[in-house]
Structure formats: structure tokens, C-alpha cells
Image 1: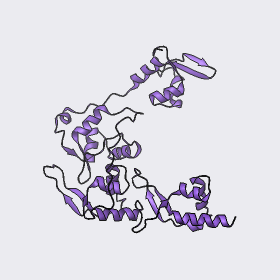
Image 2: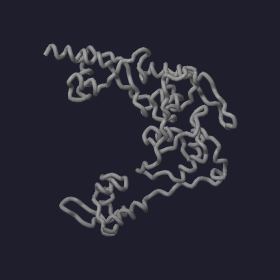
Image 3: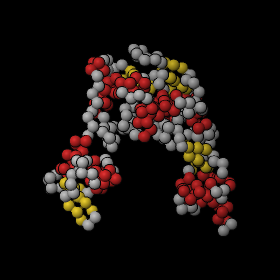
Image 4: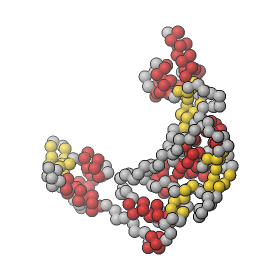
Length: 299
């Protein structure tokens, strides 16, 4: 079937063109909107010609913003701060970039460096601005995965922001840097050293000892407390052991004071990629199993 013959309903338009059903209804009921006329109906279900719908959205597609010639001709390897990136893109506030990382993971490019804060090469931003996805599309490449960092390595080894972000449970260096500069990681002290890379145009890079980062991760509950080798379980596993239908019913019982023995968790875990929040409670498996045994003996 050719595109000229293909018919699409509201659900298909929403899926393929990234709009919403109320918006389609609004356009369809407004003769001045330019939205194509209904081509076919089946009961209350309406269908439109695909080629006409595609032409409508193509006409509405926003034109890409052209950057000034001075920006395109400047040194593309120069590192820019978040404020400088915002100015280059015409944003009045850096919070626009923060919102991209918070609400649209993978949409905005990850920083090229973390030197006294996140920094991007001018060329990275120019390339993104030239090829950025349109509204409703989130097809840019996902952020590079953080390295897996062993806990039991050399305690005096100096770790950079990517390694520290990984150990503390963050999903990217950008989310870690944002939390750090907003003072949301009180467990992590000031860097133990600032390393200046030979030939680098930027400032010094923050470095922490592995032992310092591991201690912070344990304090935050990302890693189990020192000497605690026992398996910690979350709400889903605790619910299964105690015979609850799901994690929600277990959490509800806990919140209503029906499980006083478990009011104080044995640790916490920060969900990776959540900028350190929310933290999830964890309990020792043996503690849950002992409670389950006591409950079964009284029934």
C-alpha cells in the first residue's frame, strides 16, 4: 500500500508524529488549522490519509536555529562552561540545560570534561544544535555508560568524576556534577587533589581517594556498611518472603505501623541514574526470614 492510500487513526498519528489526542481533536475541529479532513469513518473512529497528515506535520516542523558565523568559525575544541553553552544556544538561564538532563535523559550531550564543573567543547554544542531532535522526539544517543569501579582497589588511588559518579550510584557525570555543585552530596568531602592535565586549556580536575569515595558511598547507603557482608533485600523481596502480594502492599503495611520490627532499615540504596534520589530501604535477609518464621509460627 502506498503512502497515498494508507489511512491512519488518532492513535497511529500520536505514535508516529509525537502529538496528543486532544491536540488532534483541536486541529480537526478548527477549519483554519490546516489539519487534513477526515478521509474515512468506522462508527466513531476517524481515519486520515497518511500522506496528508505527514505533510501537515512537515509544514509545522520548527526551523533549526542557525548559529552565528562567529560561533561556527571559532575554535571548536575550546571548552565552555554551562553558562557559556546557554549563551551560545540563546538560553537566558542555565536551568534549561539542567532540565534537559533531569527530564529528557540522552537528549542533551554529556559534558566532554569535568574541570571545575561540567564543560563542553564548542564543536559538541554546535553539532548538537545542528542536528537536535525536534519537539516530541528524543532520539539522540544515550549517555555513555559510566565505568564499573571496584570497591576493593587501591584505597589511595585517585579517582576522577566518572569513577566517583559510578561508585556513588549516579547515572552520568552530569547528574553527579550537578548534585555536587548544588551541595546535595554532603557525605563527600572536598577533593583531595586538583590535577592539571598537560596541554589542557581548562582548570584542574577534581580527584578523590578511593577510600574517601567508598566511605561516602557506604554512608549514603549505596554500598553496605563496612563489615556487613550479609545480603540486603529491598521491598519486593521482603514482600515475597513475608507473603505479601507485592512491594506496594508491604510498604503500605510498613507505613501503617503493622511491621514495627522493620521500621528501622539496615541500609539504603540509591537508584542509579536518579541523581542520588530517591533512596530505597534495604533490610538484612536473615532479619526478614526470622520475622517470617515468627509470623508463621503464630498462625
